[in-house]
Image (cartoon, rainbow, N blue to C red; front, side, top):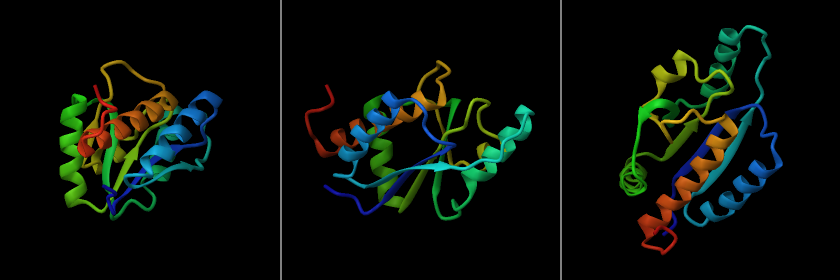
Length: 155
């Protein structure tokens, strides 16, 4: 089944590691069989102070998200098993047209982003580098769609 929804992963700056880019492209091609999917790399004003950098990233991440259901990736967020995540995502897809996953940079997400989020999601109790988090999220989204569709990818 192809869903009419739009899913976006929004990150500050560009992906740098080639193996991450390759992995994201791999899952992006597969996700497009189920839903409109994109990775948005946002330009962010640089700052030496980590708190100011976080604020700048937050503003860039939140730009254009007025109609979206915002999911902020945060190590203190809600954890799901893959099957629980698939159930949650399926329900969400029936209620929300646009879903945006916001991933912070090296210093995490600003309080403004966390306050605006409808859900704070943890991919792991480990702290993940933001590029690794992008790849893990892409894989878990693909896994969720295969579970929803009853396809054999998930074991």
